[in-house]
Image: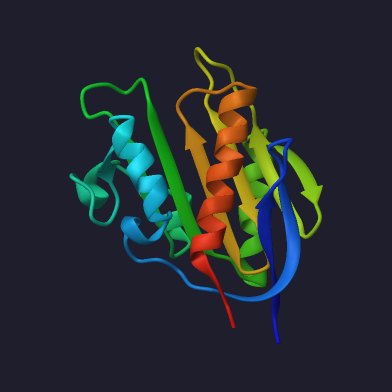
Length: 175
């Protein structure tokens, strides 16, 4: 039986891993990437699904495929269609021993900070609230979840951690 790290949210905004039997299921639609409550929150904040499967512009929202899409995953972009000032990009991709080294090398080359927390390895940056986004990549044995928020800073980074935890809870199910 395979054991995957299923995260819980701690009071410090860090992902924590609890070993539970779980199965990763690659979502094929953006509506399957986050829980319904999260989609409702996005809507309340004026964020609509612009890019990705089921989005207003589908996979044509970005000129090039994201690294997560190149790895066999999906990328979903929620934002305010009238401005680029506030958007969230959430991606989920399968991860294997064969693809892990290339992905890790790319994340390190981007200058992202590496942390190991329990059974999770994360690569990210806090960014700042004016010009640098909050970036979080969470690598598990069999999945890669990334969240990029247009606005950075510690609070927004912690929100990215919470969102990545929600995504993990959605894409992993008990055996």
